[in-house]
Structure formats: C-alpha cells, structure tokens
Length: 381
Image 1: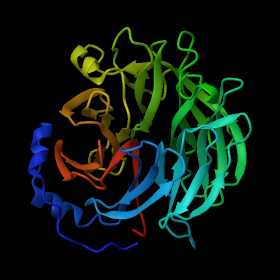
Image 2: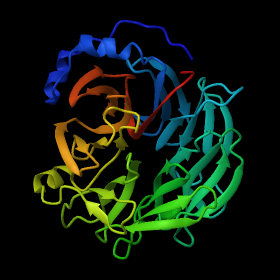
Image 3: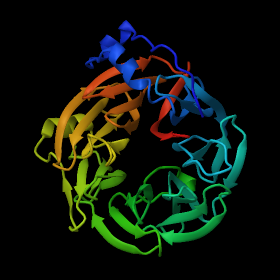
C-alpha cells in the first residue's frame, strides 16, 4: 500500500498548554518521510452518545487511511500481517459480552468473524503468530472462573484449539518466539455484571508463559501484591517481560510497573521507592510498549497512563524510569526505530522522539474519544 507524500502538519499553538516539551517540526517531517507505509489503527467511540463505535487507520503524519463503524465497543485493533493474495485488513477485538472477533477490509466490509464459544467471553486482546497465519486470543470461562487462549486461523477466523491461559481473567498476550506471555489479571467477571470485579478479596494474578507448539503452560510468575492485577505486557530483548499493572483496591497507590525475569519466579516491582511516581500513576497503566530488538533504543519502553495523565519513558532492562511527562488522557502507543506515536484524549495524535513530544494533530476526527490501545504495522515494506 503506497501512500503519497505531503507536507508535515504544523503544530498548533494550543499544544503548548499541555506542558510537554516539543521537537522541531521540520526535523519530524524529514524523519517521517521514509515511514509512510507504517499504518496505525485504534478503536474509538463518539463523545456525544458514547454508544457509537468505530475503527480509524492512520499514517504517521496523522492522515486518515480508513475510518468505519463497528457494532461493538473496541478494546484493541490490529493491522493484520500481510499474507499472499490477501488485501490489507484490520482485526477488531471487543470485551463486550457476546461480541465476536471480527476481521474487516479497509473499506469497513466484514470479511470473517469468530463467534465466542458458549460460556466464554473475549477479553479484548489478540496476537499473531510469526508467519501471520495463526491468531491467539484471550477469553474467560465465566462459569468456572478460568482463563482461556483461543487459537484460530488468522484469515478465516476458524477456531482451531482452546488452551488454558494458566490463570483467571487473561487480558493482554504477547509473543516471544515459540511462546506466548499471557497477563492473567486474576479478576473474575460475569456477563450479567459487566466489568465489575467479583473476587477482589481473593484474586490472584499471574503472568503465564505458554508454548505455541503444545499449548502447555511452562512457567508462571505471581504478582508481588494480592490485589495488583497484571494487565499489559511487552517483551524485552533479553526475554524479560515488562509488566503494567492495575491496582484493584482504593486503600493505597503502590508501584504498578514491574519486570518478570526469565529465570525467576517472582516479579520485581520497578521504582518501588519512588512514591511520587506511584501517587501520580494512581495504580494504573494502559499501554506498555517496548522498542523492538532491531531498534537503536532496544531495552527502552514507553507506558501510557490516562488516569494519571502521564507518559513515562523507561530504561526497562535496568528497571529505571527515565522521564515522566504530562499528557492528558494518554492512550495507545506505537513504536518503530527511534520514534513513537501516541493517541490521547479526544482524537489527538502525538509524536515522540528522544524523549520529546510533538502534537501531530489536535483532532484526527471530530467528536471521538480514543480507546486504550493502538497497533501499527508496515505493509508491503
């Protein structure tokens, strides 16, 4: 998919009110010129009724590539990997009870759907196999309070297998070679009560490592605090896992960023003595994204926090927070090379480079509110 070049969007003076530092617009324009085939996708809901939902695909300059309505609230969407004889497509995940997984073309036509099996509901996250032909999705057996990983054909969405997730309430999952890392939140829910947690007093959250060959759970790490729920993940070059948590009680604000080392059983809380950071993060993380192994910034990561209106940068392999920046309702993150793109609030798109923030667009689309996650993929590169 080739996208034509156009001049860079100028920065609005209103962006200065956010309190973030700014990069040079000319430098960003030159940097992005070679990245026009990176497409990014996020779900949104309308701000007027909060009951209409959509998918927006954009390029790295904030230009809309696709925009279409979907029937259910989106938790996460992803650009499908290119497979021979298939056109670009978007996979859409919802946490709405009963909602299926759906695959759309860029015109918004549904190509395939995977209906949720009886007694299960999807938990909002998927990841593709290395060749892009297999899809792994988190789900919960709400009757028994057990987590599941559904394995499906990535194009037809035909269900192939159902595995244990190694815990309760699985949420995000990421792939590391022939293994999946699954965030088992420990939180039990039921369709009749929506997202209301039913077991805060007894919940136990684990990170599980699952073989994509056998479906077996080969290792688990337990959350360091009883009500600290493991939610979001990314894998670092040394195969450790950066973990973003959400604290389920109101009695304190503990650290909510952690590291799981491959050869250890315990998860290490990061910045445990940084009380100001813990207070500002309010026991909450949204998107956790690490720079890939091929990046000059491999080992570093960015975490969004819409509740605390923060964006934090981390030397993740060392477990050190590098920078804390104000960003109102920060949401999805997409990283490539030395750069990042972040969705925020009511349709904003921000650009990150060397720790500096620049607002690319004050409003990608009027009247929308971004959902928590954004994913990107280079097509036909």
